[in-house]
Length: 301
Image (cartoon, rainbow, N blue to C red):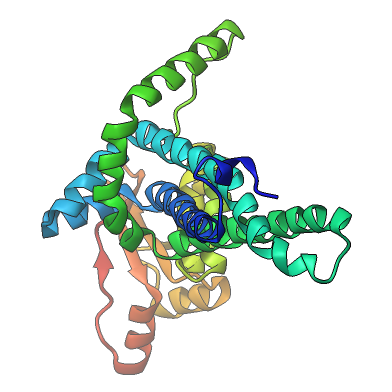
């Protein structure tokens, strides 16, 4: 039994083979749009700018596509939809028509077409999922820059071809979302909350892209806004100080007991009040104890 899509072209073995080749092409086309979609979303704008600085028409096209991401993702979605519909319309009948005669030799006539359709549907589904979806997606995620450059020119051509349809579809979708009280969303929104940034940092650390110290430094920036002065400063009565006129033995004992690396040096001003003269580093005390060198009092912090 020859199915409708093949009947439109007259039927026959040659037409079935051509239908199968067309199905393979539609799988490839579906994979192209899937790879383009993930590559454009995945590639970093900073990397795009660097590619443009290096020169090349493809890099400039990628920059245009990233800047108009919503429109080009709509191109990808429309291309995926049309490819999938075409594959379902042509692919299954073509495969079924090819294997129908083979099954006729081993199965009752009443089951031949049913089994042929089931096998054709399974085969086309396998091709569509593996080679039209999963493989292109994985490759685009791993090689986003390379894929984005490769698809830049074809995507520009498809954008020109699909633009009327994109305008109609986007306009219609936005109209109905507004009727539902929802503002149209943009695919190019890249803002993240503090918690989302922390998750990104954690994943980047797990993958070895950033060090633990760098993660702690960035997380410290988030905590800085919630930090008050008293949490990072030591109250004056609790500050361990060294009197400018204290003998060395007393200073040395104090440093050994407190285990700080720097000590504030204080003295008396003309009115008899306390004033800070600077600070002394414990290594200078050790140098004095060992070599009799002069203690250096630093006047600034």
